[in-house]
Amino acid sequence: MPNLSKQKTPMPVQDPKVRIHNFEEVARGYTEEMAVLEADRCLGCKTPLCVSGCPVGIDIPNFIQKIKVGEHESAYRIITESSALPAVCGRVCPQENQCEGKCIRSKNGEAVAIGRLERFVADRHNAEVAKSCARPASNGHRVAVIGSGPAGLTCAGELAKKGYGVTVFEALHRAGGVLVYGIPEFRLPKSIVAREIEGLKELGVKIELNTVVGKTLSVEELMEEEGFEAVFIASGAGLPRFMDIPGENLKGVYSANEFLTRVNLMKAYRADSTTPIQKARRVAVVGGGNVAMDAARSALRLGAEEVSIVYRRSLEELPARREEVEHAMEEGIQFRLLNNPVEIVGDENGFVRGMRCVQMELGAPDATGRRSPVEIEGSEFLLDCECVIMAIGTSPNPLIKATTPGLEVNRRGGIVVSEETGKTSMEGVYAGGDAVTGAATVILAMGEGKRAAAAIDASLLKKRKRR
Image (cartoon, one colour):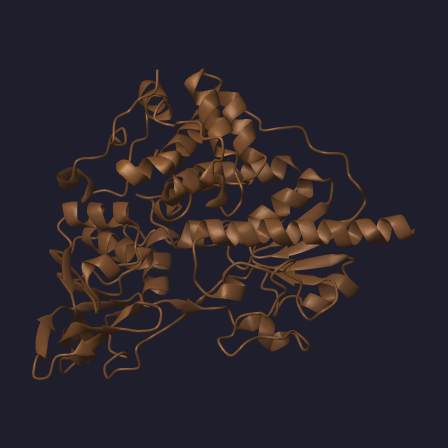
């Protein structure tokens, strides 16, 4: 009997008054009863539009059908045929703009909670199954992957399943890329990321930490001296952007990248941290994406009494996931919309004491239909704060392009690749994820890693046949 409710089965969450004082996961996950109730909302469409909205092409109706009949491990196997990181994607993917955005139920109510069901299946598997799968037989060929974020891990997993010897080179002391340094514990527990990475290791993937390709090794050396037959560059978007306004060099101004890395990777919120972060009473976060929400909610948990999101457009234009915005509002984050910073003001000792802003209004729509913000004359005001976090985006990591002659990049610093294969201008070298696009979503990066893995396999398969 289908569940014809127009609303999703609610997700249990920590009480906002409690969770603002800890870094534990906010969303608690579905019980089996909740999962079955939500799965019963799926109509099993003959033409499942939800699949077309998934960048990695998960067979969504089929895995949901398995939940309905209690075959959870079968559901997990269906998901992992297409996705290397199901427990991660179930938590952080913007489903409302992808699979759920295509769901027919969203035409008259809320979409089926596909992301929550994916999380349920993955968490159930991780809790009940000690080992993921047997290691495939080696095909005798080796591929290097630069970067252990979502694109790199996906590419590594796809190739390892086919028997390739894959080595992932990670610059930091922990694997996971943005999943460990960028996304807070309260949204994505690091134990979840570690478990997904262990699953890849079980497939035979090797991970070399503290290895900065471009310094320790070059791309050419990986192929010419280390014997790798192909290289996939997934070095991410680690170069923070700033607004180029006065005062950005004051003490207490952070890029969101630095702030979140200190909090998530270096555990700056702990009393015994060796890399503590400035704890301010009033914090202003500039930007409106998921990173801005993460930074604001982290600052609150660090003890800030007042945290503001400063965004130059309206609530309707906020690019962050709806769930993250709702959680931030529940926690008391102030949304100062249609405001734009023009200067960060310091005291006599070089510390931030405020941010000068102007009010904005949305002008006429451009050719794409988006309304650009226009400054309201005479609207300037001072927002009191002791810390400013810039969360207005990042650019591709510049190190590899600077140390790899012959690698073509565009004017934004992204590596130029074939849209069909991810192949770069260098023979045997592929790229994907934020290193190509600039900062984007986890699932889009995974889609590019999967695409490149298929292209690498096809290319090396041709070589094997010629031999």
